[in-house]
Length: 131
Image (cartoon, rainbow, N blue to C red):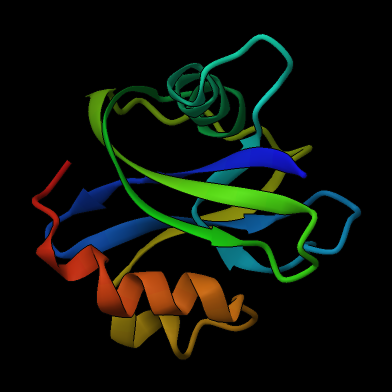
């Protein structure tokens, strides 16, 4: 089983979510920035790389805050809370169709989301400070 990371960014009680553009099982799903941990890479390195690759932002991983399996059980997903170092957004349209800052209530109405993601944002995310 491969490891993957989810990047948790919080601002003003809302979380940065992206709408996936890739042609895979997650296309059109709203989720945090995510991606597989590559060979020889730490989870922290993957967090930093994925945030920059997908949204052009620079982040500093602070701590791992959650873990679950993806719905297809192909990945063990490690959720990392981050500090935003540079928030100048440059969307990688090959991977991201759209992005929004959403509260948990808004997430329930935005469209397709994975159950594990909703569980995280309901159970673990509210205690996190702003990024």
